[in-house]
Length: 315
Image (cartoon, rainbow, N blue to C red; front, side, top):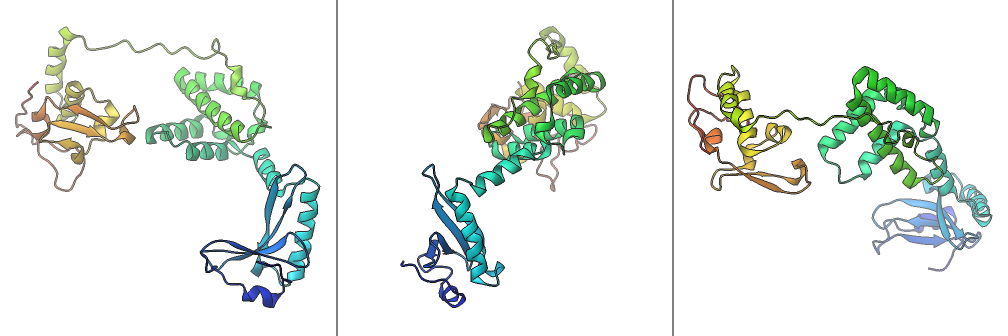
């Protein structure tokens, strides 16, 4: 489309949305690189400035909406200033990104990390939010660039004293992940200060070693039968017979139980391995036995059991 002198009348004749269904630029005959961008899907028209920069890249920047300027000459003057900056190598978009990065707070970094990391499970997202908001609350509105290695060491030790070693480790692992994500976006960000916590400085969390041994299972099973809360007893027995994790079992829904195939199917979003999974139900009586009633108004697995009625289990 040949350039025309952009006037108020000429701009009003520009169709938006453009009949082609695509964005179309109508260039100005007076100032090279100045034009009106007509949307292909909406009625939006915007003034733009575009030119090649010294490094060979072509950069297009928005001057403003057509309705934001009373006179076309005002938009043309602003575009001229932007084009002069592009000619000298000043990139407004890059400068805005740099300014935003320089002032990016821990809160903003957390939200950006959680939004961009598509592989995080909902449970992990909740843990990140809880750990950061609880233990790093004082830093949420501070710029990431303000956080130093000394501050990390002091905060880490304080969390360990007040909330325990595991809480301190989790909070700093969350901060480390947020910082690494921000560093990938902005190479000018300093090195991750959490690196000050080298392996020798991280709290050592001893693994859990308590377990119900084979010879103790009869006593454990009998003790479950004595629990006053029958729903809790059924829940623990389901864990015992299926090997489900406690949160997976607690969130179990009726539509995840296949009575015909005698299996429980967990969607990938709730399975730790991040994929669809299936586990056999050897204790079908736990789910469909005569001693358990299903709530008509609930889609969840856990319901009230009729007091005093038996519940049979087969394995």
